Image (cartoon, rainbow, N blue to C red; front, side, top):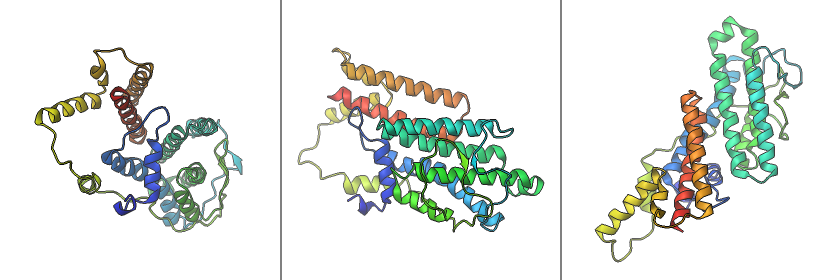
Length: 304
């Protein structure tokens, strides 16, 4: 039935792994699934990979330009990109720690944060034809570093979405690699990349209602009384607003519920801090998806 939706296997793998139950049950949502594809995979991860490789293809005839970077790890004290390099290296360490601790969902979230850093890097560097004409040396440096980050992402995403990793490697015309401990120059000047292609395609939001109707299951013989429906909707609204505690106010809260409420509160504060700090939209989207997932877990704990 999942295959009948037409949603690629890699997208299913991303959404289900990003919402996998680790400390409690999780809740499936068509709208969240579509948002995960359109906002995270397409606009964040896929955008960074495609924008980088298309620029190499269109402006450098698919050949990586001479950047002046020596093979090996990039200097964390670089005059122009120190923050970018250090941020990526910090996230790489967190990714390795997460996977070694079998925190798969966290590891996948970190992958998307790293690709978000890549998008922010391209934006802050002003990668375009004007930069190439006005400062060709800097443009070549940005292209080289972005391409090597794409190479890193091919390894980071492999445990979760192997077909996506294979597609990136084919577009890079590069062999599979291990996860590095630091961002480095591994794809060197003169390397010929393959043909850039979009990794993901936009899903029409209208498909949500179609899929709900098709895969929602058969109606029961007797419909819910109107009062019961209203009560259920009211409870759902409370949960959606992070007020699931109202449903258990007449009884003691379990330790699991209290712990999950703290996680929801912490993630909510994290989202607010990102918005107040005017963080990149991709970083905010990832954090909001995680907040929704935590709220869904809290709702399930409250019901049980």
